Image (tube, rainbow, N blue to C red; front, side, top):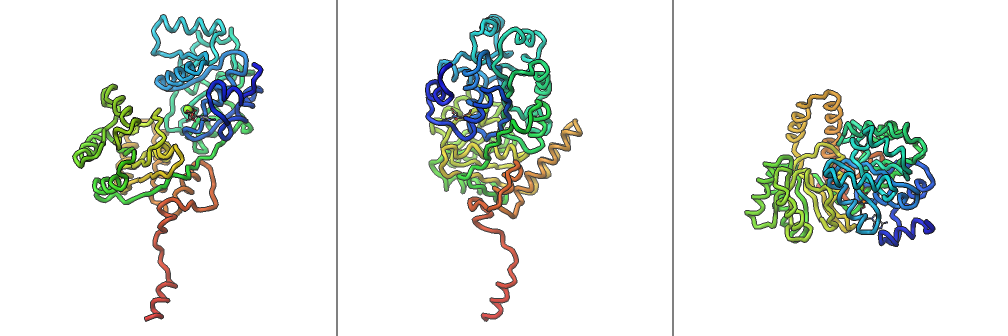
Length: 414
Ligand code: ADP
Ligand code: MG
């Protein structure tokens, strides 16, 4: 291919310029170097391997854990004229054969594969016989037990380095505390020079924590202040989600419930209505969010304490994708910590329990923080800040500390 990556960006994807880090990562891969990409959700990770896939000979093999997301990505690529396909358990026998045939004939630029399929002996044997442009491991935090979404199938991916030592590999994730990051590098045998860490700050999001006292009333008050704006309210259980949604509807708000227990079509209806601004507030469990691409979400409320800061960051990050001011409100009661701790301690794997408790503590420390929330949040992701942000509740309204000089002044003046 004669064009440069920037030209491909315009011609195939219709974008004018690269986002931060994209160009360097793309160049590295094209030249055969590995990459580890830590970039917030929505930062534009996909292009980091999609463009190199078009610039290197052979097919790019993309590992992705979520069948639904694979299909979306492939549909979008095909729409742009890219030769892409996916290979996972959702395909029937005939379609699988068609995909494998296209792979063998060199008719694909990208193939999305579920990890367990990829690492089967039969599939690896196929790969040995064809030209491979690169390996991309999306949602790479799945390799780490420290990550919030550990998947045992991901552990086997390290073997790709033995099988295909000459093929560049890119691992991508949005959520990685320093420990998870280290795990990914070790397991996928990436060197520290391969790291590209994009900033995690979302300066337009205002973080706020409010004591959870009469939460229904607090929520209603907050929503009334945000009339006409779109937002998400996260709650812990399906039951609570339904209860909250019903109470908001009774108050005349355009609210709907969303959780994994609802029929597919109902969930799709809610998602569509929300994206068309026909629903103002979606009350949801964490099941809501994967793949929502709505840029004008103005607020995210956590009615209950999230399990860890990765989830909190990811969920609040759905607000303000358009860069305009947005709010993240956490209703926090100390009872929530005990509740979550109880749930975690029911787990059967002691190592996992230990890790999750550690993460819950960090979440609680954020909620109880007396210093700039953004500094705490970014610090957790390894980004040290020297300055307070000026756009969180602590910065805007510093906690009252006992001021002896003030007392002295008062004493003197009367
Ligand atoms: P991530 O995987 O990091 O969450 P995606 O790769 O899904 O992010 O990209 C998020 C959105 O940003 C997509 O709609 C994508 O088309 C868009 N995007 C990515 N790179 C660019 C760019 N250079 N210019 C404009 N839009 C971009
Ligand atoms: Mg992605």
